[in-house]
Length: 268
Image (cartoon, rainbow, N blue to C red; front, side, top):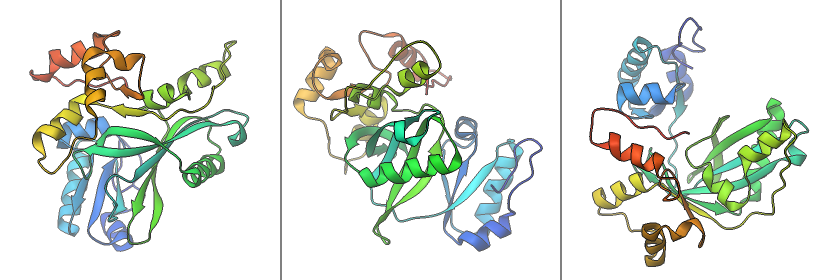
């Protein structure tokens, strides 16, 4: 970390971080939501020390700790994450599914808007090893990007909380929240296996379709019919974030706030 939130001491100075990482580099926040409200994005790329120092100073004024990471030339569409619940008994009993963030909005440093299940056992093994080494149990998302120069996946970060597309593993057959709940109550839960599943956040996906001429629609005509009719809730392999006709409250709230000076955040 290069800036402290509250009274916590920074782990490195601007010069120390710059010397260790070089330029360009990316700056990310400890508190994502606060950072987005202050800067309009959750990642800022800086080209030199002056830009870096300005971002760190601005974040410090907002009381937000930030961290710097070496910029990696990543392969677009090849980001993968392990969505998992590790119980107190350890990694051998973990419930997990790998998701490929096939589409982000904005494309380079945005958040996921189309995620698909993926068969990447090496990512699962590496992520669970990191969680095991940290002694962590609970729900988490371990994010990997693909470095084209090294031709390998690199661990980006681990989110030890529910995240934007957590409903994808639930729909795929890995109900992580239910597994966590069952572990501390008298309830029982056992996964029946993982099925191929896709998740879409329509607000961002439609914005990308409307605003990026280079982006081609990844959904089929059948997918769109199921989305419009609501049939996706009981057939097909597609699920959604926020929009669900059987539970209209979240989508209605999004419409209420979309065109006024108030922010809407999903439960993640």
